[in-house]
Image 1 (tube, rainbow, N blue to C red):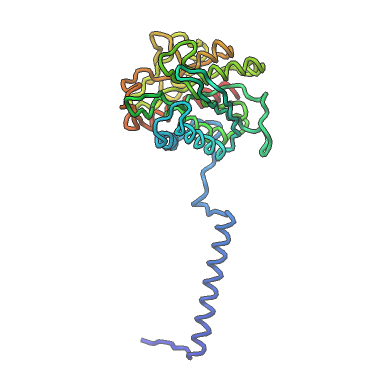
Image 2 (image 1 turned 45 degrees about the vertical axis):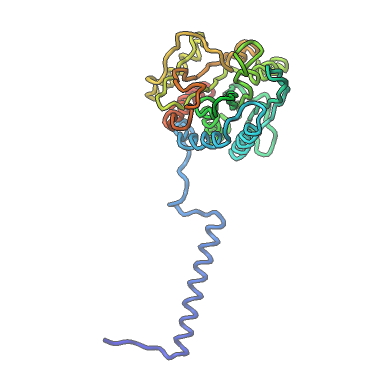
Length: 329
């Protein structure tokens, strides 16, 4: 066996040269990565805006739900709801949405409480304020939870599920700015009644929002609205209220059929009192309540994360996006 041995001086020179070449190559690779020139293996797949509903990720929505629940019980006026509100605003900003805070004093059976709706709009041009005449559809959820003194109520399905899903919807809509600019996302405060639902107790945020829409005349810009409420149940059964606008009901059911999700939807045997009512009656915007009212843990301590399934969030997000694409393009 033959070994070729360099003289010591030459060997050191060659070693130094080899190390210099390695360092240069590593530096170039680091610079390339730092500048964002990702290799083909790391490149994100292209977005299929033609079938945008396929981009909705139930697992990401579920994570957003978890973040809301982590704040604890979130009744109107509580520090926990303020924390949840900050999470919502931060998530919307990360997706490129501009958020307006709509604060107002609400007269409740527990005295006056300051409440805050969140209105998110997508700018027509990056870096500019959104055009307030561009929105044609309202997609809404309430983000508060009912106040209890006897139990710890975190409202995993009743409040958090629709809120988390709406944040994921914001992320997906931002992938298609032309579609996103036509949508106003609204997070209602004060949906829950402090005692029992009456004309003056409950639906505080939606009543305030609807009244301002009508006063400003902006309500005439909107074609329709969709409300999400309790949409994360692992045994998903959407109960569309009996008095829902027929065109919206048929359209959403057609989208569910197209996505092979029709089995999760049925027509309820009665009307439902929810945030869609002020939109229909005060703002005069035809609005559909997509709600799973067949939910045993409703308003109990058992309304926890264990009752939910990311697949249910995926179903509602995809069906709604499909319907948006059919009606706004």
